[in-house]
Image (cartoon, rainbow, N blue to C red; front, side, top):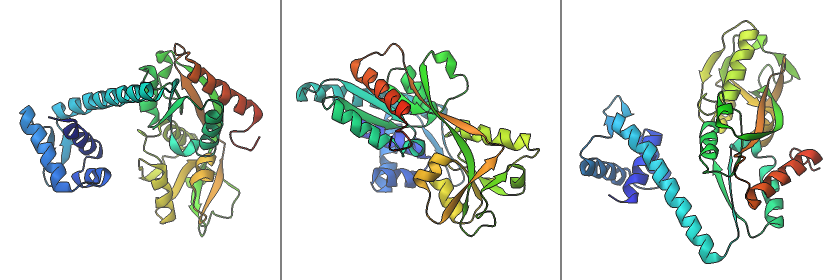
Length: 303
């Protein structure tokens, strides 16, 4: 067994598809399938149940996926430490983030940080909110920009609220609602809605469901993709009305789409989270810079 087998298995297990995993790894599908079979043969167990109708991890496969993530993350961390020693770099910042909500400011913020602290090695990890909280709690991330999750108070992590982002809808420019400045949640009762999958955006998903329940109806969810970009693509294709925050719409929306606010206003927090026991200079410097930008209004504006 070598690391190639583990990396290949991880891709297949996460995608639950040989074809998607092969595309992600940029290798031929037969080579990928053969590598997974070699791994199963060496371990003497079946890791994936697959036939024409189903494709799922066995219990043993689920355990191996979890352990593989730990092994590969540890290896990557070790290699980074070796390289930092060889290059004489001073300090490290491992920043986790969720993509679309941070697009408007993250690049500018990191540019400022690197200008001030050029010898700090910055490593970025785009993950789901659930994964981010876990990695910060376990010390695999120094600090992160993410959404709150139910039950995370038990992890004893420190947080700073950056913004409460209002939820709205996204429609094609030719849609009947496109010229409206705002709509009510009640008016969406009969519309097919497209919302980020709960496992990827629990705060947004649950807030939308709560708003619909308060308005007296159960939403018709047409699709729940794993990426916000896919939500917007479905909308652009005319498959339904998308649910998104205003920051996501501003950062990722095609000119052919329109963002419309919804009343009563519902918001989803965006926050910075870190382990209070990690007070290393690079991490403290980033927290201080974030607080400075927040105070000066530079995150969503020029400041």
